[in-house]
Image (tube, rainbow, N blue to C red; front, side):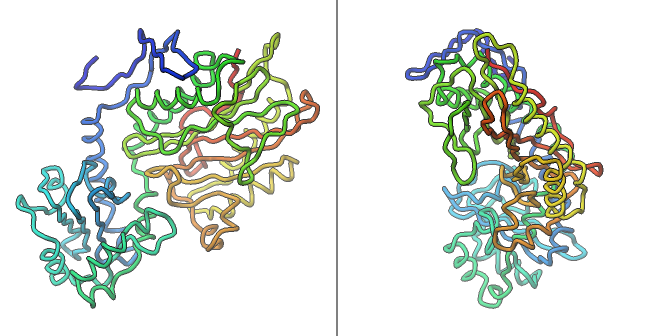
Amino acid sequence: MRSSQRLAFTVAGLALLFSGCGYVATTPQPATIEMLAPTQQMEVREGWLEQRHAALLDMMRRHGVGMWIIVNEEFHNDPLTEFVAPPEVFVGGRDVFVFIDGGEAGLQRVAITGFASERVRKFFESPEEPRPAKDVLPELLEEYDPQTIALSIDGGRGVTRSLTKSSYEWLSEIMGEEATGRFISAAPLIEEYLDTRIPAEFEHYLLAVRLTEELGRRAFSNEVVEPGVTTVGDVRNWLLDQYWLHGVQPWFPPDVRVQRAGVEMPTSRGFLAVAPDGMVIERGDLLHLDIGFTYMGLNTDWQKMAYVLREGETGVPAGLQAGLDNATTLWEIMSGVSRPGKPAGEVYTETMAEMEARGIEAMIYSHPLGNQGHGLGASIDFRSANRENAEERQAKLLRDGSYIAIEFNVAAEIPEWDGHKVWIMQEDPAYLTPEGWKHFVQRQTSLYLIQ
């Protein structure tokens, strides 16, 4: 293995036995996806950062921002830091990153860090001998006289309200009462900055989606599942171990749901509830998997379904396949009515109207993907109409090139299960083009089969 090049994580020839787990990798499968080594990831992400900074000044001017300040605290990283600065470890008590509209001089970038960093100096004015913020910030204020100073305050999401009360007061004291009166929320700027995808990210995000699909297929196969023996917790543990082997980090726990003929499964928050770890997977079960991870600052989110064949069965009941076909119909309708610049609320309304006309019961709860799993941007989601600022949420425009998790479910009554109602739940990462949404990998059109 070329340790200085790509990390090809493989479990071939390795037998893993974990105490208390219900699975043993008796027939290990070599991973087919090669992820970049950490140093290579850093190099690529620094290239992305230069492109992001090149687009920032226009964004600042669109949102009326004269100065943008991000404060990263020791042991309490700001969620913006890795996307505005090189993605390395910052350990100063407070490391401050400042972007200024310098007029004809263009974008000015100043880093006030506790420790000097060669990587930081590639992107910011940052001296070998760090100077304290109490000296630098007043100097920048006097030199550039920004009429607005944007901070991560008063936003509707964690990443847009991440400045702590202590750091707000610290900035206010340093910059003075007049400057404090110029403080505004950076939320609109942050949303555009994080929801704007750059072409160079595509190939690496595609790699992450491919790995997500591969791990999902393997999790719902006889490599991991032995009917009547394997538990839901075993599947989840296998996935978490695979994340570690591949050098990616979960941004939410892997979820497994189980539906059975004639059995009413519990619900939670209006959805089918996650199955308990101790539940044994049996023949005839309809399984659902929801997984996603972070790789190079980008997040995947992916849901698929599998059927555990009964003794003597060679395929899924026709009613289950018909339900999955209805899910394909929803995907095609939503993609067909989605276009850059179109309000997300209109896409939701038109899609649901067509599903109702076809007599298909459905729920849509799609959300942006990218630097966060539940990203910023326009959501095509039934909940948007019922949340605070519903009109504003539904009026958000779809952004060309943005990534989304097209997430939904359709309900179906299964004749082979005596009319028992099931939910077919799907989720696929996709990207927006002038012709609608395109998926990164082929979406599921048949249930995975477990023998």
